Length: 98
Image 1 (cartoon, rainbow, N blue to C red):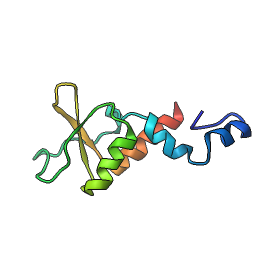
Image 2: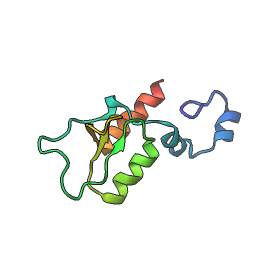
Image 3: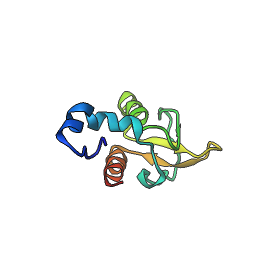
Image 4: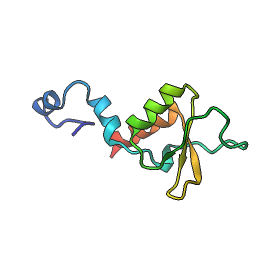
């Protein structure tokens, strides 16, 4: 519904900011991550977030800390990869295609 409203009525109902709304309902997935850098997280990097965190939450952390990357962990807290602005873009494209 958010990605491709079926009718003009639905598009009007969900609003012109539906792309921003999509951030809140799209989780970070493994396909959106880049590999963890060889040195691991650097000092000053924001606290990691778990896989499945909404893109809205993850993007807020990325913007607040301005590091360009955010470590994403599995259920045990082990790093799976890093989310970058390009990864957010991949996630939104993936959500639009679904």
